[in-house]
Length: 256
Ligand code: ADP
Ligand code: MG
Image (cartoon, rainbow, N blue to C red):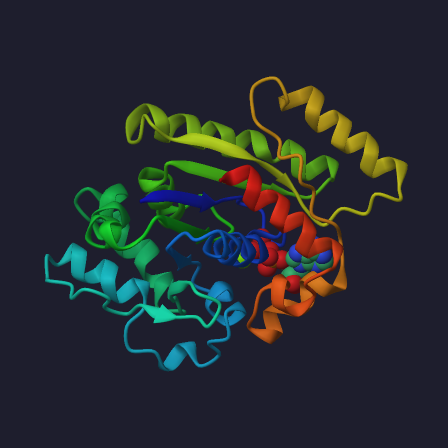
C-alpha cells in the first residue's frame, strides 16, 4: 500500500478537496483506495457525504486509541464505503483529544503507522487528509507516508509559509521516516487572469522547482470545486467536463 499524505499547516488551501478528488480519481484508475480523515473538523468525512459524524461509534480516534491500548482491531472496523468506489476512515471532534493523548504515548509518532499495517493488505493506496497544523497527528501522517502532496495557493505568504513545512519534513525524514518523499507541490485555487498569479507561480518555480516536483496540473479557482463538499461527491460527478475535473484528472495521472 502506498500512503500519500495531503499536508499544509495553513488551512483553506484545498487539502480536503484535493484528498476527495485524488482518492476517487485513483479509484477510477482501478486502485483500491482508502481515504483517512486526520482532521478533527471531519471535513473529509462531511465532504464524502457523512453528515452525522458526531454520532459515529467508530472513527479514526477510536482505532488509534485501541492501538495505544494494545487492543485488537477487527478487519474493516470503522471503515465506510463511498458510492464512488473508495473506502473512508472517518473522523469527528473526538480526534482533537488525540493530539494531547499522543504527547504522553510511547512511540507517539508511530501510532498511525501501526494502524496502517493492519489494513495495508486491503488497499493499493491510502490518502490521508491532514489538519491545518504540524502537531502530533500530522507528524504521525508524515511518519507513515511514502509521499506528501502539498497544496498551496499562489500567494506570497503561503509560499513563504512552506519553509516551516519543509523543515518539519526534513526532521521527520532524518529521525522517523527516511523514505519520505515530497510527491509534489500542487498549486490550487488559481485565477490565471491576474499577472500577480503568474508572477507568484514563477517565483515558486524559481525558489523550489530545482529541488521539488511542482505538479504541472494546476487547480483552477471555481465555485464548482467549492460546491462538492455539500454534495458529498467528487468533482467527476458534480461537474464532469469542467476545468476543475480536468485538472484533478491531470493530477491523478501525474501521481500514478
Ligand atoms: P483545507 O482542507 O486546506 O482547509 P479545503 O479543501 O477545505 O481546504 O478548501 C477550503 C475552501 O475552499 C473550502 O470551502 C472549499 O470548498 C474551497 N475550495 C477548495 N478548492 C477550491 C477551488 N479549486 N476553487 C474554489 N474553491 C475551492
Ligand atoms: Mg481540510
